[in-house]
Image (tube, rainbow, N blue to C red; front, side, top):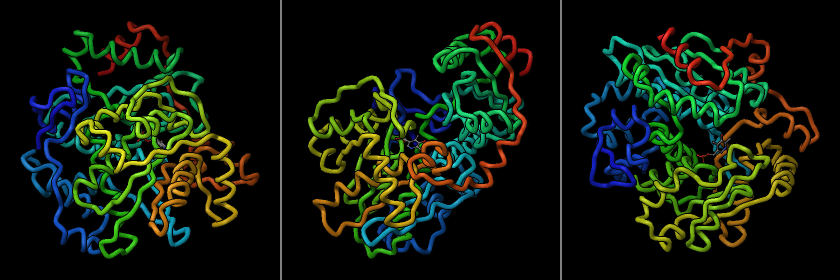
Length: 434
Ligand SMILES: *Cc1c(COP(=O)(O)O)cnc(C)c1O
């Protein structure tokens, strides 16, 4: 497997280098040189494969030439994919794909865990530890912390803005211990990001510590997200009939992984890009003009993105031709009021508790099905509703149950290192520790 940059399609990189670097030097995004077409027989017989085996079949093809022996690919997947992605049927036309059964209760667990396993694999045999720096505004950090927890040979340092993440988010970042250190920065998320950036530019640090990052655009996070499109399709027991996926989107990683699955041969007739008020991609699909904007805050805040980073990958897949991309992807955007109303409606009609992000996906699928009859639609439910407890309880006017793995966090002891946003303090701390 070789990868190119969306900004230079003739300069290739190995998978190992792409995973460690995260971003190419030219600030594009890494893309696989080939997306393998999986055999029709495999797709026809999906029901004979477990979720992990599906991942293995995909990686076996995708990683060709990346010099990872097949038994090692199998181990990486078995360690990363340790929880299911079940389908819940609402009615004959609407299904929910629950992606929140991992440790941080959001789909980002799949990407974070797979990236952690790949990095650990590529880092094997190194005497010195790899130190991963992550700046987080809350949500991604939890998935990354849990993903790398107890991964051999890897230390994780999470920087987050003090007082600016939710109570449970902070618990997710600060209570693991072991190889996960949390730094509480007296400043903003931008300060945290600046500290990480400066660390990579500092010669004293980079000459004595092996540093890497775990940002959300790492190709290793996208790959496993294609597995669950197959896993979803399998559970519907269709006979080659095609389906529609509605994807609640922010940075469009999830939807891009779906486009990979379609390229691999999964019969997907339509993608629906479901957004909140941050609607730059639906506007682009309507008009053919891409206009990035500042993000506006909404109820489905993990999708508050004004300039989605994976848009460059989508353009690359479609060679920037608007008329083909707008055939494959329909875009819809919704207000918070519409989102709240539909959360109540889904609960009243189906007894199903949907979170604000999944609700945007449900709205978009409903809108699409108003003019596309008898289609089978799958909404990606990207997080567990209890992650947004105060909002969900207010909207539904009822108490909701918190899963054990989240509930036990509240009682755990927080461990952090407090720091100013000054670089020298961070640098000294890193040099002393690693
Ligand atoms: C990150 C996130 C999204 C957006 O996913 P993208 O891949 O960035 O489009 C949607 N819902 C939840 C709950 C998330 O955490």
